[in-house]
Length: 203
Length: 203
DNA sequence: GTCTATAATTCGATAGAC
DNA sequence: GTCTATCGAATTATAGAC
Image (cartoon, rainbow over all chains, first blue to last red):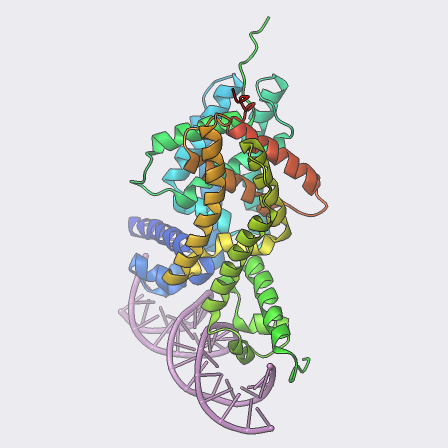
């Protein structure tokens, strides 16, 4: 990518990512043409190739940037709780808040895996596994401490993440329930699903 | 190329649906061409238009047939249980069993909604709502009877269906856990998530 | 019922002017 | 850094032969 120094180009790069994110989420990667992206940005199609090697790299960059941002935000937002129930609640609230704020990015990251080259797919999968491992560790610690009652931490991890991420598919601002209310309900469901119970007082 | 002149039209229609289902699930609707489908069937692209008005109708027909089949199978498989916990367990087992047996159809019905025309989208949405209503009624009855503890039956419905359907995205035959084991674990999680408890003995 | 041939678009990507 | 112009290939869908 032959990006030159200059604020004009940096702004164009941001605009391209924003337009591509929106269009890929709305219509799907394969259904969106480079010309459509260019039109949304306000440049000609040829100019896009100053910022991306090809259409595939544009998609991969969006997905990888999203997952890296997700992990970085978790590292910054994670609390210092030790009680597994509090840690799970923190994770659920973080996950929902982040995912409702980035509906398009989330949608792309889960829907367009098929359109990645093998190398890019591997990079994305690795990052997704890292994020899943955050929850899995919470569940495993909680089970070991007797705070959670679950049969398989990996399955519970996948089930919970699917449940939480699914919000992105139906949430609309101004709907029947506020984001805060949705968050509270899912915290309750998540805790209940792993049989969260009172942590035994250390003896 | 195999010559198919004179072959049975009904069989070709089935072959087209099967090929389209697999290709759409593997690569996405927008990324699959009519020529690819024709090649998989063993006919020329033009012959496909004897069986579908256009590519969009082919997708819509697959999705609507899938959802109608899902509803019909539920009607045939639903037990006669009255205990909400048993009804929920029946639903969870049915949902998982059906979805693991039709991974491609489920994937398409979930991923390709945005490629439907407004009219076809409305038809698909209506069927999906009917299926969701099955679970929502179970949850509402269970809550009313004191068997479940939940805050919002609609949210619990969406959360549970997302959790269950998510299995399709990672399940592989021959994986670490058998389908029966996966089913049992999800039954446990689903019941726990709605705070299933002992039904009070009628006085 | 299926074929061949093709019309009419659209696609991703590149070259070169400024 | 962006534009104009364009190449070669691919797309959906149709027309007419058999």
